Length: 127
Image (cartoon, rainbow, N blue to C red; front, side, top):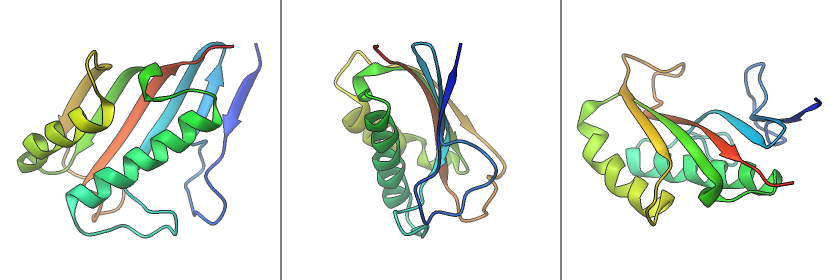
């Protein structure tokens, strides 16, 4: 079975990975941090979360899917204090219910010390 890879957007310096990879009807989205289209990382949690959602939607669109096709989401946060805010923002961005299955973890750090959130996901893609 062929694997289709989705590279980082042009102009974005990314580590050696695909932003997503599709195998069969499953799309695996790499951990997406809160960088904007110019590769800048805003200071605030809400702005980083919004950028993550924009980037996930872009990847899903490129693969012919939408947020409603998400099956599993893993959220990594660097501050436990952001969990309640993340839940509110998540409900608006990933809803309405039913939501994808989700795991949320508070981690010691992400690759860039300014990163406050990273989200990876799996989607079921038709065709």
